[in-house]
Length: 525
Image (cartoon, rainbow, N blue to C red; front, side, top):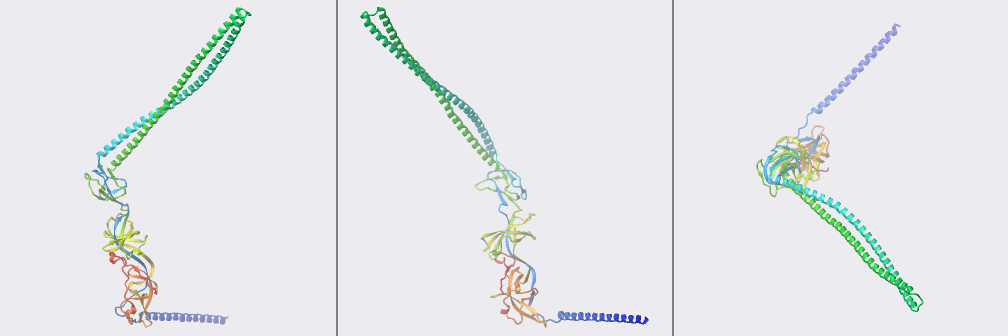
């Protein structure tokens, strides 16, 4: 039992010692590897390198943000309608002046008041004339209304009278015809009776002469003949009387009809009078309109004595003072200049070589001599199609909107404008001095080091993009970190092999009066 325990302890101690030995060997191996790596790194970094040829300058291909811009000079101006020269349309003495240079004015506010008593008198005269014409119109309207009512009543009454008289005339005519017919019938009856009595009397006389009848019978027949003759004469006289009466009745009825028709004509004549009244009313209304127009004109003339600003803004200039007389002529003399400083812009004159790259909406930065360390932001709003000659150089007017919330900028300030026409973020770029133009495109000379540390040079074709004047974008042909030759003579390479030194042009400068360098080379590998 004791021997077994001793053997187990011996084996455990052996295993422990073996593990410690393996850990020591592993640690020693790691230390040796680290020492070797450090030695190699030291040799690579601190080994002696061959010096570059004297005068040779190199640069490095790096990632950076490039901004291509066009620079131009111009001046601060007011936008269209943002600055007005206010004058007077009439002649008069300045009675009151309500503004001074620097005063903030609201649109419609009175700037000055002129002393014009003659215009005030004209207004009062026009008001009096209008009141008189309105009174006349009221009278005419009252007369027309009364005439209308009276004329209508008279016509209705006259027409009714004519109708009654016409009916009476027809009745009289019918009655006359009946009376004449009756009288004529009576004559006929009397003539028949008289003729019969005369025939009987003749027969009785013949019979009496023969002695066949008594004398009394002859007397009776004679008397009857006389009676019938008298009745015939009476009937004939009655016809004459009836005819005379009928003629008188008809004449009376016709006269009544004539009078009724005359009354109707008179009533209708009242309509013509009404038309005359209405014409007079129209004339009175026309007179009122003329008076109103005259009053409006007089008031408009008087309103010109109160000179107002059409826009809100700041007074920039006063041309005359209170108490002075303004003499208006063919053109209104300028009294005051008002500008809205919130609506300013810059008119920049861009050289014809740069105008092709300027587009609407491009951002711009403006500086003025008054605030050299305070740039103002803007944006291209308009590009003129017509050219402007500036110092015998063709330029184009580019309008740039401004942000001027603090009213620091003033009209006519000289402004330097930088318009951003291109931008590349995190672009691969080299200094512009590294680019060499050739007939086959752009090239750069790339420097590398061999294992012995000696520099080697090789010409590469590159494709370039935009440039900010100091660095040029490389689209193809180089990698980040490549070392390129900027200036100096490359050993073992002729000047023709290196290519001519190339500097990106100063776009926006030169003839146009200064500018920032920009542009972009073109090159194809």
